Image (cartoon, rainbow, N blue to C red; front, side, top):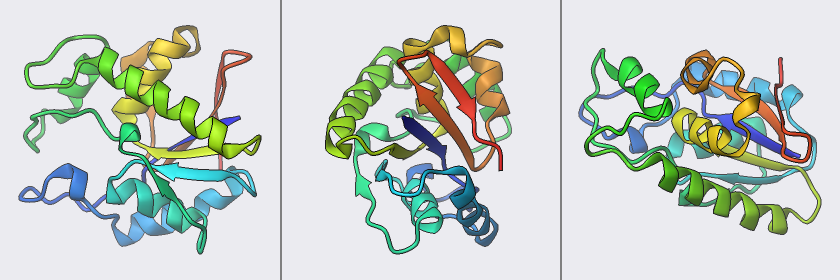
Length: 178
């Protein structure tokens, strides 16, 4: 089983690139509460972004978290402003935005990382600390029928943090409620 963990609430700082944001105190508390929604003895890996690593560290205190930048968020040139949600909805729906990584490239790098880390997990559940757009694009490519309302609505419904159990063999994606 694969568990996708969308990071908890970061401290948004306009003069700091989003891929360097840290979790807020509330984000750390919310991440710690994920423990009841996640498997006991998984293989842990996160993107290289602090907010994703910190989310797993809070959920699994004292446990080692491997890092793989292929689980990182969509690479993009995007201002930190009020238009972010609409841009992101358009992107995950398949619209190519200037300066944004191709969705097919995101899905390919994410899929390759999943394959690699499933092998390293050696039968244990795989828990991936990642990001909303990246996980949505990968799921839309892998299991499009599982995103019943479509990628934009799926992305918009993701919480900070959130946990999704993905079973590629049954083509299911199930939100792990807390």
